[in-house]
Length: 122
Image (cartoon, rainbow, N blue to C red; front, side):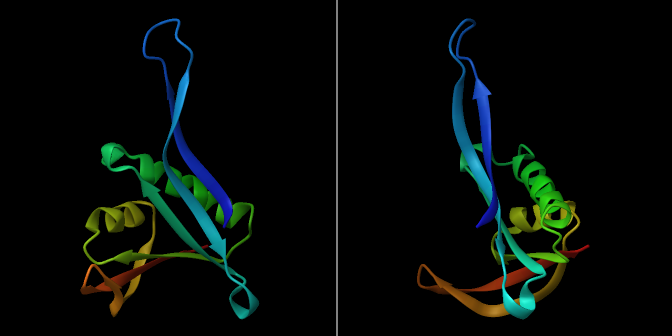
C-alpha cells in the first residue's frame, strides 16, 4: 500500500502530563499496475468508538488529494460492503460517485453480500 495515512490523536489526561498518542484508524491507496496503472484503490477504517466524528471524511479527503496531486492518478475507487451505508455516505460526501453494484461479490459470516463500487475521477 502506498500513501498510508494513520489517523492519530494526541491528548493529555491532566495538565502537565505527557502527551499520549493513539491510532484511531487508517487510510491508504493501493496502486494498480499494467494497463490499470492510472488507478488507485483507496481504503480506510476508523475504530468504532470514533465513528460519527468526521474522522473518515477528513482522512479520505487528504488521501484523495495525495492520490491525485502527488501520485498523479486519474481515478480512485473503493468498494463498500452493502450493509455499510455510513461508509457510502463518507465516499459521497468526499465527491465519490456510485459506479455500480457487484451482486453477491463477497461471502462473509455465512452470507453473500453485494459490493457498491464508488469512484472519483480527476
